[in-house]
Amino acid sequence: MHYCDHNATSPLRPACRDAMAHALTIGGNPSAVHAAGRAARAVIEDARDAVARLVGAKSDQVIFTSGATESNALALAGAIEGALTEGDKPVRITRLFVSAIEHSSVLKSAQRLAERTAGLRFEILPVTADGVLDTEALRVALREGKGRTLVAVMAANNENGVIQPVAEISRLCREAGALLLVDAVTAAGKMELDFALCDYLTLSAHKMGGPQGSGALMLGDGVPFAPQLVGGSQQKGLRAGSENLSGIAGFGAAAKAVLANDGERARIAGLRDDFEKKLKAAIPGAVVFGENAPRLPNTSNAALPGVSGENIVIALDLDGVAVSSGSSCSSGKITPSHVLSAMGVDAALAGAALRVSFGWNSTAQDADAVVASLIRLNQRAHQRAAE
Image (cartoon, rainbow, N blue to C red; front, side):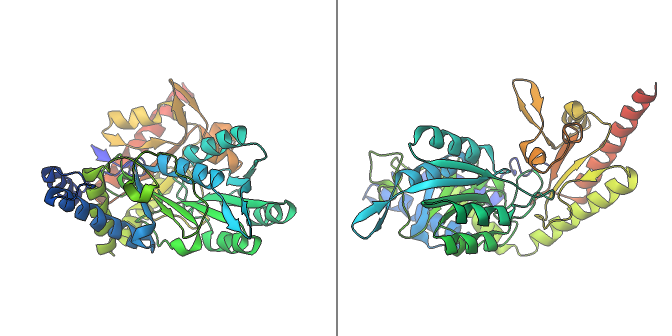
């Protein structure tokens, strides 16, 4: 199998597997004061330090979670239900702005909060044709309304890899007194991240070669936050429940691997660029979404006009190639990507999109296998159309 779906999940790194196996032998609860408990606690704190260094945060700002979906939901609900103390009375967030290309864990959580929270204004912000947040629209939205605002934007998009202008967004938020949540799940390990630019930041281990079921929320000092899981004193009472020791150990090992391998990004960027060059040469009509904007080095979101996207992933899978569709599938029904729709891509072309994403164990043979399979698929599709 030529695995080219790292944005969905990146295969477990050997170092992460080793760290998890070691953690499973400890046998103590991290909250216990005996030797086994202290050994378990040491594993967690070591991982906490590594994950914090990955984004320039302090270790005491890291809350470990079950993954990106929980981290995003926890950040949004925690911020909305929490309050800032300014003067003699608490100040709550009354406006929630989310970009149109956010992951569904952000979009759906934000929509649910808006439905359940009296007085909360929810607004979806547009993006350009290249998939970049319209910062002028954000500036106007921040200026025209009243009340404290929370803005949610991803560092880089999971479908097309387009990098968002977080520094500029942060500046606009700071000037307006707004808070900023950055979903860095796809970006982590693939670009530099600076937690100082935001107030909340989310991560997931399995996107960088760590285990599934382990994530993190970075919480800025003094920001509004109300815990959602209560009942225990774990993680300073910010998320109750015994920690997932082996998952956290694997997360820490993944963070260390990324921090130690400076050449990984450049190597992967070469694979992606070579893939796109060969694809366009072989199929001149191929379209690469977001190619005119800054992108993550590992991600390519492409479409073959005239080729139905409904069977692309299956056809490539039969060829021994694993990629993702540019669409979402639920109960067997494929619908166009909300990201491509927000970029103004027509439904027919969006329905033919696929995402190719490389990672730590990708090779040139993997990239070439995708191109070869797409060439065969394109030829079969056009032969059938001509008959």
